[in-house]
Length: 312
Image (cartoon, rainbow, N blue to C red; front, side):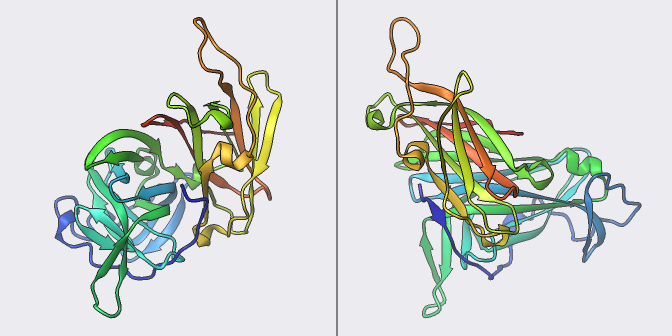
């Protein structure tokens, strides 16, 4: 994993025919009528004023024959217009499957009860000498927007990412995590973890906690990390490097052991005795009380599982 990612992008390509089966003609989804936005903000678009919701994928990976990240979007009774893309600082484009190259996808209209799926497999840089594409591994965060005429349409969105660990073209393990919407975001998040001591993590049966956290505040801030045991006692603490404001797309990603740099106190559980592990809770908190968005993973050998995170 990469501890801190900075990058850029301002090129947007035509989304092409690959999405024709999902999209309706521009303007149909957002046909003007009376708005009922409830808790959501309104947004002026080329199709008129809409109810607007914004989310973030704190971490995606597109690493050749190692990691792919699948984006899944679904809607309920009402159609929704989606858009997604890289932070403007990344200076590159997403490489997706079905084959697609774009910094951002906009006006993606998904009709009632329909769904949309694409897989991020890396980055594509425009080669200004050949005017072709140079493909490379890509990691970072992704922003998502959703527009509709009614709050109920935005409430019913299904939005998640599937992380797929690959080997020789086949999926070895996969896990799903929800996209975090800004109206759900918090300054403080927690997750229950299990962790093998740092100096024993080379063992084949070890359990390793990994995480990524994005800064949603417009101001730069680090993220404070605290780990509590099952009794609620503080066992360790640390913090990330300072992350740029939300427009920067900065993400901190690492294993918990590397971030803390110590062995967490482990005990043997059950009979017969198993390898000692630490069990407790990890807490993430914006150092300057700004909103953040984390995602947490548990690795056991080649198996990966996303760990539910809770806003506090």
